[in-house]
Length: 173
Image (cartoon, rainbow, N blue to C red):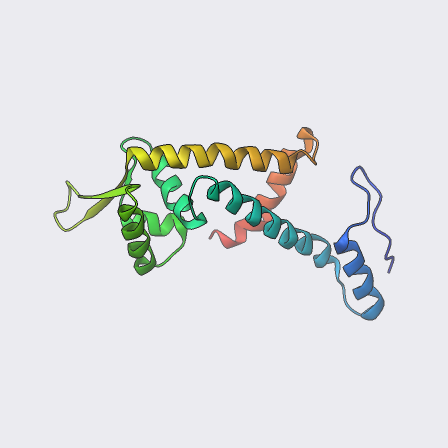
């Protein structure tokens, strides 16, 4: 097997190339090709996580707080969702969501209201302060992520998005 990184418009050697080369040398019996993709995805995810946490921290938000607030903001006026919908959108347990809503409510970023359709039901609504906070954090996040994408020509970005959608679709079922 050839250990040389492929040539192309983005040719160059990175840490993953060095890792793959070492594994090919040490274990020539293994097909390490998945590492060429997923080690890069994993490393990129770690870098993006740091960049995202920084963007949120500049607005006094934790990542989980942004997740809940942005789900409410995306829902449109009146920026209100049930805890069950928030659980589904943020992929946490109902107990975790209850704790998160409590904490966001204490900070004045959301408030609970009785559901007009179900006396036992509760709706979580974004406050004005919550909306301002999530809007500012979202603007900052998009600036950070656009900067990361500067490494790619604009013409190939939709292709990358399509490829990632295809690979990730198996987890969305």
